[in-house]
Amino acid sequence: MRILLSGATGFIGRSLLSTLLHESHQIYALVRMNSQQLDPRIIQVSIDDLKLIDECFDVFINLAGENIANKPWTKKRKRALFESRVTLTNSVKSALQQPPKTLISMSAVGFYGAETDGTFYENTPPGPGFAHDLCAAWEHSADSFSSQQTRVVIYRLGVVLGVGGALEKMRLPFKLGLGGPIAGGKQWFPWIHIDDVLQAICFAMNDNSYSGTYNLVAPQFIEQKYFAKAYGLSLKRPAFLPMPKWLLDLMLGEMASLLTEGARIVPHRLEQKGFEFKFDDVEGALSDIALRY
Image (cartoon, rainbow, N blue to C red; front, side):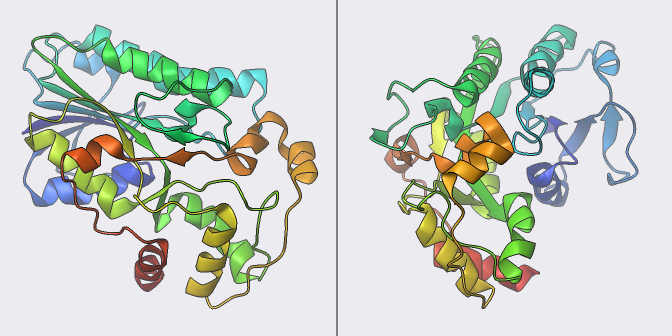
């Protein structure tokens, strides 16, 4: 397939590229400037370059977006997060001479807002908050591709567990025995193993019955304190040091909701399709990742 990929140098993008290159696809990576990190077999293109390509892409995989948890949500940061997702997606749509046959775009369970109560399926009304506003706008920009020529698939990701990403940020504190329950630890912790993310993307590429929005989270429902204990065990470290909500609110402001809130998310539409998760329990997922380090 001819594949256009944004976010190629990110956590998911790097893992996905290994799979796609192994399958001998022709890959175009959307970049601001050429990167030495990327395999020489990959064609690096800018938004302006896209305007000159008159051939149709089989798939546009949209992974771009600055890390939502890297910095506090100042007005400037919120604008950067919006532009790296929504503005970029709109720019690709405007630049392409021909629409892609398939768009696979990421979103996040933050779509459901800063919630701790209730159970959320793909069609459950969301709560308010910046994370919801950002995800909703991103999904809207992806949905704008939908037509008779373009099939659109949107994945709402939980916390992606793998070598890198969120676990990389947590690894040192947990290795030092400083991990533990956050804000009491009773908030839900929707998660997904990186291998299941890659599997879901590949299925959506090759199976035309995939369409619309899917919660891409493991079917196991766990609270944050359960995750903390399991991660500590995978590193052979204790994980009982609590982090109070007031301190996170003081340190991170509005962004603290990413850690202190968490909804019970159900991968309902994937389960209806018979999607078989490679990792459906967090202990097995974390044990697998520990072996990869």
